[in-house]
Image 1 (cartoon, rainbow, N blue to C red):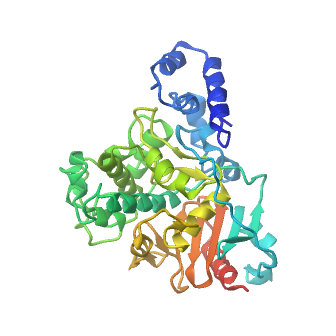
Image 2 (cartoon, rainbow, N blue to C red):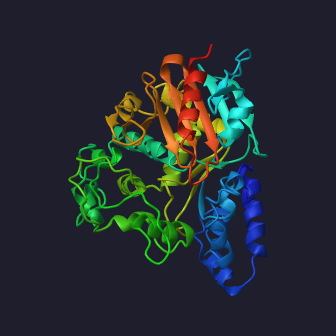
Image 3 (tube, rainbow, N blue to C red):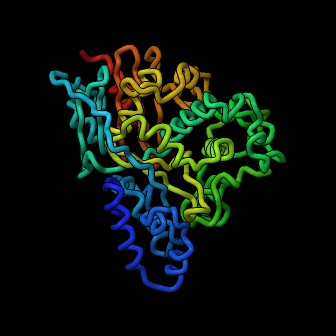
Length: 419
């Protein structure tokens, strides 16, 4: 592991040692050309991927090993650090909470059986801000960073709200091309920031990952940007055509969120990882460093804000508690007043999950409940009526069983309503 979770000085020293151990002219040239302000571990992690590294990247979703490939992704992918502060927001613990019975294949079962059946790596429950249950499985620990996949989208919406509150974005009804002129000639040039936050950009892309000789656009982006680091993820949005009028049709697309990330960098003049660190991670009092996967070398690539954030179970729970508390981390305001309310105004999706707000999901019919949701079973589930936050980090197979979502979401409701 290249320094994630280590104190900064130790990380930099460890990363420098790794840099000096790299052999070969190409590697040394990249080291010499790395920006001096970049942390040594980030520069090392951003070296052009070898054939062996690329082969390993293709295994990310392999159901035989994804319980482990979803962790410590900085060992395989380019990444950008998000440092934790010196002072942690300590989560208090409360005894006496009993996990309710679950339903497994139509029969009552205990939590352990449910967790095994639903591909669980980690599970935590907060009630009124207190940790009442915490569980790590498959050799995951409290210090292990785990990929969020599309839960990263909800974090992007948090950053948009902050930029709006600071006046860096004038209005959600501005065209995104106001901030990224390169997008003016295509579908995204006609879309507002609000359209894109709601996944209603109208851009002609489907979230379908076909690879091989004739890859889908989403598959091509994954291969060239994430696996090979030969292109920037958001650049595929330039000159893309329309499939619908902006605002007219819900169409879930990670490219939409990548465009929001590009817009944030242009509007604020800061990198996404720096925004996350200075505006959320450090003021929130995160316990451990987080990191974004990236689509290229330091100084060239961007953080993958649509699918690439990584953090520990408890720090994801802290993010959920911030949303539950209307943007507050204890006595510290993280998100503008009223922004969580805006994020969670849901519109029908026509998809299996019933509603979508601003990069945030309605996943069930529990009154007021909402969630950040990521590929392969990643959830931050917030249940305001009971003061409950649930985080589940998972390793679902790419072909998910039909029963899986029902058993997971049904148990979330049971846990939230348990006394």
